[in-house]
Length: 442
Image 1 (cartoon, rainbow, N blue to C red):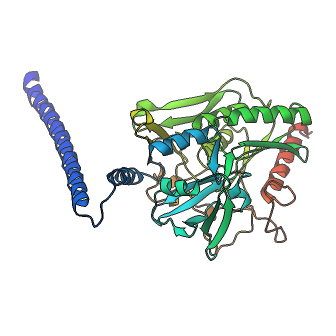
Image 2: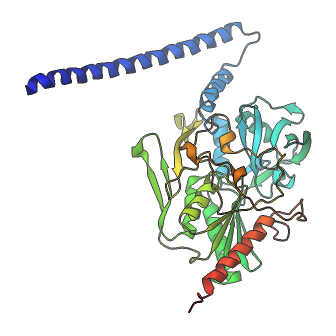
Image 3: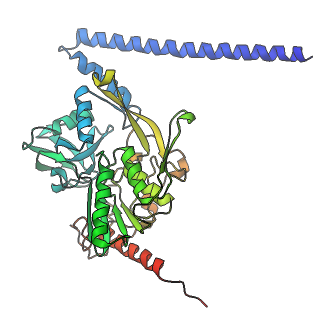
């Protein structure tokens, strides 16, 4: 009886195996057919296009088209672009000091954030600005690498960007290219507390600069520090390792972030080492819609571990990890490929959702008619949020605004004009008083 039962089961298993093998073969055959189609199209273009095309440009653009159809952050880097990227992560390069992305639906370059104390920040460029032309020539339709290449040039050379912002008419901004030496960390005492601004994680020395800043502040304010405002506003992110190391400075062991790829076996967890460099000092983390990627890792880790209060507006929502894969050792450039999502210590993915602050405070009076700033979820081909119910509309939250007489042209990081920073200091002092005031009771 058992043999009679097993025979049809084994037959079904064998048939299933044959079906799976057959399906895989069919899929592979279809892929080869599509590659033959690509070859046919390429040959037609080479033979019959009205002017003689550049074959290398055709291939490079085809590769970029394939990658950008996956998500906004996957792309191909030419050998020159790959070398430029390696230089920029070391902290110095020539240009304007902008982190940009491409809105492929509109075909324009969008500003994620300007870096502090660069031509871009001094010219007043803002998160969400669109760059539509360079020196009067339209860049609509160019790839992100082509647009960035046009923005770079000899140090000291002038450049004019045409900007489209919210409901305003397009306007030109004149800049002069500089050698961009990224100073990722600035710090000073403000109103008796430690103010630390991290403007980027794209510099591989960010954690070292933070350690130096903490020591200087301890000398000035005394140790342990009375409180810390960690300003990550308009920080477009950067290197995962730097985000982990910076988070580690404020945590006494435990998980910082985990990354998960398509294969569950590729899950990696990153933990802080023993020892909090700030000895448990109360922390308020400032964020806004320009805080992205590595900045969100830090904010999410300190929020989930209940190490800090997060204040500001909902962050950008870039919860994916890109791996740079050199091709032939970099001789053929490299792929920047999205390979993982990252998860905060509580296990939440913030892809397309962002970090929602504990205390929601706007830097400006909210104009309901103004164009919303773009978020990760708004980018064409953006990876979806892991759970649809996790998507939250920040406009539905009750967000505190500055008073009606607050300066409209406020100065960043000045408590007298920067409303978010003013509120962060107030919250921090309330936390400090609560920690030192004994409970009353009978």
